Length: 177
Image 1 (cartoon, rainbow, N blue to C red):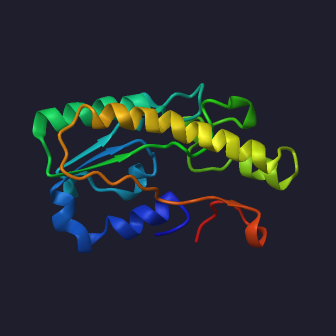
Image 2: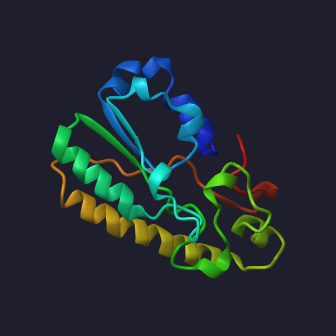
């Protein structure tokens, strides 16, 4: 567990888990995989973001991940799968006016105008941020429903690699550690 994807990846995909990773198909929408994940350690690592990042949205929408996960499930029927969606992470696709996303070439750098900095500066209300966040989560959950209706899984766990702070202890978003 950590407050940022790259730290979560470092802690959860290290050599202690080589056996599990070798049985896992990882469908990844998060570009941090480029720096942190070793393709050879997974049954399959499909970095969908490489081909499907949408620079106009500043993120990868859920559908390309859902489609890849369904295809992989049907083609190789892996014992374990991880599908790493970017939502509900900003930018909030259903509420684009709240903040802009990131062009893939700029990924890894937080733009000053991200939604958490806008909240800190008082440019948006906390209720607006949570409304956008919830709409983005529902947007992704609709795709997860499609996924679940199209794969054969005995157990499904839906979780997140980090949360977000809205000013608690002076913290906004999800800074490292």
